[in-house]
Structures are given as structure tokens and as C-alpha cells.
Length: 166
Image (cartoon, rainbow, N blue to C red; front, side):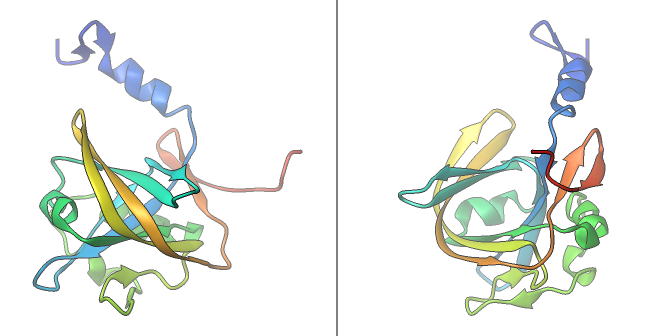
């Protein structure tokens, strides 16, 4: 059965995960020859405050996989509603993703979104295999907060954050 994973219905598992809203990021780096690479990730989290570590998960089948697991540095751009279409482009394969956004380069040549909700620059601490993904652990070297509110991904669509309920 194509939709079963060791007794677990894969479609039901995917639907269950879709019930959890998550933030959206565009993660970028540059290859040895200076080529920019990037992907959209909703599996992003703070790992540690001391030392400052984050984690982001990358599909091992992604075109940019080799570039990220060998990168010394990468950047996490936290997406705003204005970046929703761009995030969809970065979630696809086989396209010049950087042709669609207003990226700038930081002092190390890594692509950043200057109008992101936040930009977190990291050194790759470790790449840990995890099923069909790899967990990129980044040691945070710099964080900049932008002015926009982040967007969330929920049930296969983008949601804008509203007012606090508490």
C-alpha cells in the first residue's frame, strides 16, 4: 500500500501534521562557486539559547541538499505575508528561485531578504540525518529583526497572524 508506512496511513499522518500551524522560512546559502541556493522550510525551531542554536529540516531529495550539507554558513529568513508567493517558488524544484525575490547579499555573499520579519545568520554546526530529511543545526552568529509580522503555514495555506488572544 502506497499510503501506509509501517501500519501508519501516510495521508492521515500528513493531515495530522497539517493541524499544527508553523512559521515559514526561506533558508539560503551560497555554493563554493558563489551560486546561491535556497529552500522553504516550515520545520524550523530554536534549539538552545546558550549556546545560541537553531535547527531547520531539509528534504534529502531537494536539489540544494548537497550545497547545504557542505556549506559553512546559511541564513534563515523568516517570511512575511508579502513573501508568500516567493516561499512557494522556493518550495519547488528546478527553477531559478532567486529571479523572483528582492534578495540582497550580506558581507559574506549569502542571500538575505532585507524586508524579512527576521534574518538569522548561522554557521553550520552539524547536519544530522532524520528519516528522509537532514536536520541542519546552526550556531547563530547574527540576528536582525525586521518590521513585518511573520506568516504561518496551516492546512496547506498561508495564514496571517492576528491580534493576541491572551
